[in-house]
Length: 337
Image 1 (cartoon, rainbow, N blue to C red):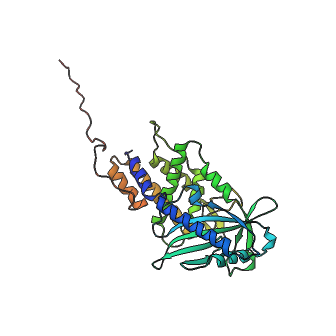
Image 2: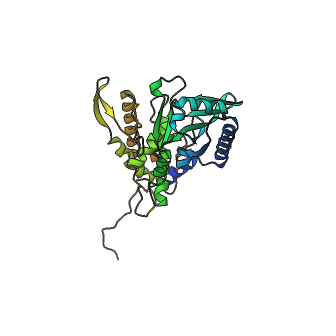
Image 3: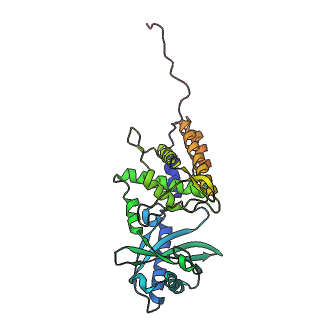
């Protein structure tokens, strides 16, 4: 196995969404939106408290390649579901309160998205997830679009804080947790590089897949070996695929990635048979590249395989003194003086 841990960690530094300037900008956008909500919501709308959720709170965010920086914010309104039997009605009030200059606002099925524009392009966006708390103490998420049919406008039980706690507490050892987060980010960037358009697995599905199946890998020296951790994880994910039968698709591949908290959703459920096959094929190609990298002698040769999967931010090193020697030591079999 070649010594490529440095290249993996350099790659992580390049893709890790941990830049103070970007985080500060997102925090500023969040605070501006929260201020606008408090000032502009109708008087009959209950008060709310907010919390961060998603990759920002889980510390698994990556610098986007083609999309834009985002932050997920939960808003828990101080009312019961009965006040808004149609949850979209509350989402409309939130939209109207934040729909001002320099922003575009859209009601999506799981949230209200506030886009900040620059040069005609979206540069940042904030997703506002709307919740109420039930008598059972559980949170309920407002789901539905503005033009959704009545049966698709629902309050769905949800546990975003519980999920964040599970992801952030997956490993007690700090070095294991750090490797786990690095590998999640590697796979998220791989997703951006390898998938174009519809059909890509959800980012949260990859995070939850790590929660289910990732295992840390450290060498005899106690140092992390991200190459082997990734290889083992991808092989385990490939082993989750099964053949299922449906009237529409006949026998087809399925892989379930189930939320470990309510509502226990299968995060891969909406993938079509073709999308699921494509996902497996791309995972298999990643597995093969990781194995080929492992089988190489020189870091620069190993990294050529990895760059094809992870993109240009995975750098190929110059030949160095760390390259494996190709000649064996000469052993004398004759008598010595």
